[in-house]
Image (cartoon, rainbow, N blue to C red; front, side, top):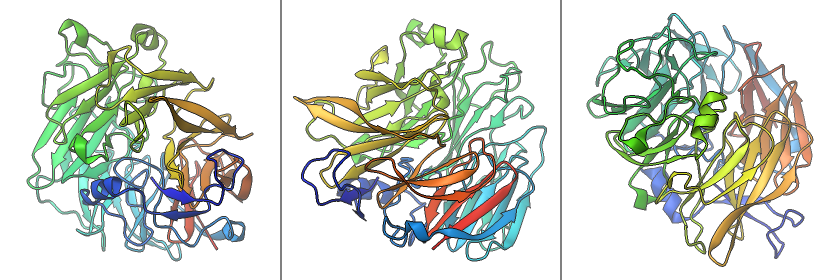
Length: 474
């Protein structure tokens, strides 16, 4: 999350907001320093930039509102297949995993492929790698039911600390679905089913202690089982964890590294003493061993029966709202196009959201969040039809989401840098002005599905459905 300066006096969309960036509050900085994957220079080491998935870089200096019009294609490189997310950037290289389970290291300067690591399996992966630049390690998802530990320099697999880590016993039904995450000495991976929800998959979160490779498993159905379940070991199934962000780590130190996942369809019976958590937000301890809290919409049964997954988006961590009675908030959206405002200190159980806003469009991306110089929090959301922005407004201690602007074209998961909102859609990656949504630059790409851009070291990187990775520079 970034803090942006401006020369106006009122935090509204028409003022001169989001001109330059400086680090956010010490609280968030401390939380980021807890992660082993700290961004160096203006790197982008995790999907969403940081373990809280803020989608906002604090370090980019070259690409600004004054220079963005100078962006042009520097290079492009063809991969074996498309990637369903974004690349990550660290140590002068890009790392990206394709659907077929191949992870590439690409020289960020010229697009040369430095190495690739190939996995094979019965299905695909839509997950994304995570980089610990300090340790010189890339954690790579595979199509082979494992997470692999690779050396940044040469892609050699490190079979230490329990790696490669098994994350499913039924890869024909279970897909390594979302971006890997790193924080507090743990690696987080999530699983879901394939398109069509076929087979007896059970979505789950696998937490890996990077000191010794010990794992904890939270199964969305049969959550009393702390293990990877064999086929049909659970009488219930589904509950996939497939949002682009996967597991999200709370950045506020008072929450002690709490981890959140949002689930898709599946049975919900936790309120009756059961162990099903379909269409829910679940908060777990940092080591993934203990479920601490949850939220489930009151109409969960309807969401499940109509395949309107709550978990098509992962929770967004808002920076502390100091004037609010509920200062630590999260936003959760879903296929139903409803944004639900949640209290992270008490998620609310069944029907316990603080407020909700309908945007009229299903959400399949991960929003980005940033603060302006008045400490007003802005939320940027990409959907098929539009990119939308909301301000977080507190009146008399009560907090709500207030619509700010809406673009005329859609986009996937946004990346925010220096008051610019970068989004990708079929045919183009665009830079929007964060204050009003106006397009300030665009670059040509092919068609996309879930692919999204990143901003690192004066470049914008994005891939498309043809399996081409593009670099745009000044």
